[in-house]
Amino acid sequence: MSAEVAANADAADRVVLRATNLHRFLGEGESRVHVLKGVSFEARRGRICAVVGPSGCGKSTLLYLLGLLDQADDGRIEIDGHVMSNTDDHARTAARGTHIGFVFQFHFLMLEFSALENVMMPMRKRGVLGPAEMVERAHALLGSVGLGDKTHRLGTQLSGGEQQRVAVARALANQPSIILADEPTGNLDVKNSGLVFDLLAQLAREHRQAVVLVTHNPEIAQRCDFTRPMRDGLFL
Image 1 (spheres, rainbow, N blue to C red):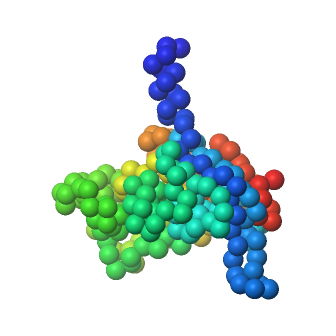
Image 2 (image 1 turned 90 degrees about the horizontal axis):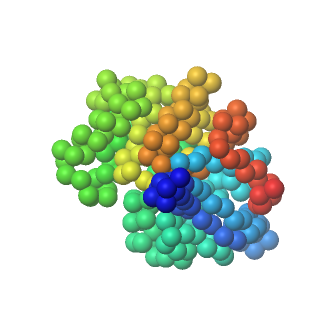
C-alpha cells in the first residue's frame, strides 16, 4: 500500500468524535442521580456504533451530551479535533449545525410543512446555501431515501416509515460528519426498521460519516460495526 493510499484510508477511518470521562448528574438534593459515571467513547468515520442497554442506564443522556444538546458536569468532548466541552451556546449551536445530524425515535417533523421544506430547514438555519441550492440538495436527499416522488407531500400525508425517512434526509442536510440516532427504528414495524437502518448505513458509508445509534433492538445492534453495552451509567 502506498503512503498516499494509507493516509487516505487513515483519514477516512479517523476518530471524529471523542468523549473522555463524562459525568452527568440529574436532579437536585436527595433526588440527585449520578446518570453517567465517567464514560469514555469514540466514533470513527464510516463506522456505525450501537449503544445498547436497559432503560435508564444513561444511553440517551450520553447521546445528548455527544450532540451538544446538554452539558456534562465533568469530562471532555472533542469534535473533529476541537474541544467543545464548556463552550458557550453560540459555539455549541454552530458546531451542531456544521458537524451533527440527529435522528430521533419520534421524527419531530413539522407536519404542516412538506417533506421538501422539512429537509431544507437545517440548511436555512445554517445559511450557507442559496435558495436554489437548498431545493436541489433537498430533492437529491429525498430521492436517496426513496421519496423523490413525495417531496411536496405534507408530513400528515406520509406514513410513519416515510416520515422517519424524511427525518434521515433532514439529518443529512448539512453534510454532517456525525449522525446521532436515538431509537430511530423504535416506533416502526420490522420492514420499516430494516429500511431506515439500511439507509443510515448506506448513506453514512458513502459519505464517511460516523453513526452513533442508541437502540433496544438486538437485530439492529448486531448489524452495526461495534456494540457498546451500558448499564448503570457505565460501559460494560
